[in-house]
Image 1 (cartoon, rainbow, N blue to C red):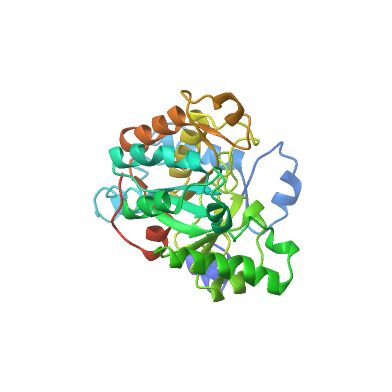
Image 2 (cartoon, rainbow, N blue to C red; image 1 turned 30 degrees about the vertical axis):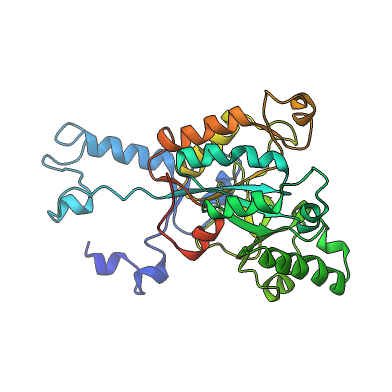
Length: 324
């Protein structure tokens, strides 16, 4: 039979000849699948493959029948290996807690950089909770990224427009007066809102507190992101201490699903040698400094190929510098 008489007289794409529904007998949707255009039962496909494999034998395909890929059939050679897709990790720290300064030497030793989101009012109060301006400037001089987190850790969804501008814009200006250059913002409590205000205050991006999980369905944010002012991130584990296995699984899952950008959110960094270590580890989403250092070491030598560590500013500016 001539092919032109066998196929419908219409464009192949329109006829749907390049699309088949593969239907599994026994599946709940088998009947509806078989009622769709161009259904193909998996039993039929399996029988066809068996017939091809039996080429030249009784009940099989004619002698000399072979199965090749399109590349092999046209003599194009083997498919070249695909380039390794990059998985970019950004270590982000919220609140500007003084404990986060413990990480400075670990970052310097490994030539890595992170992003720190600062509530400027907490720093100005100098009550022992937050890092000092001197410490924050030192982190920036090391190449770390410093961004805004509102003036006093307010949920922008609960504020008036004037209050929102005060919290976001005043925080941005305060960081600038300290010689910093904040270009990224993070929403306290992950309460995404006032994106236009964030932009008008001078920020180029904003981060949420969720949307990425080692278990999917979203394993990483896109680069460039779908929305620069609501970028997805990985939150800690059930508000409790963050385990090394959890951090590693997040990166491995992202790498195994096409790569992308994994912003990891940290809060309190706790060091075992300090007198309040136990109370620190009972705080919201804490991480043991030893665990965090172990994660940095793993990122440097044990993470999947193509993994890199870069602060938020570099990811969104497209810079190629940054540690691995």
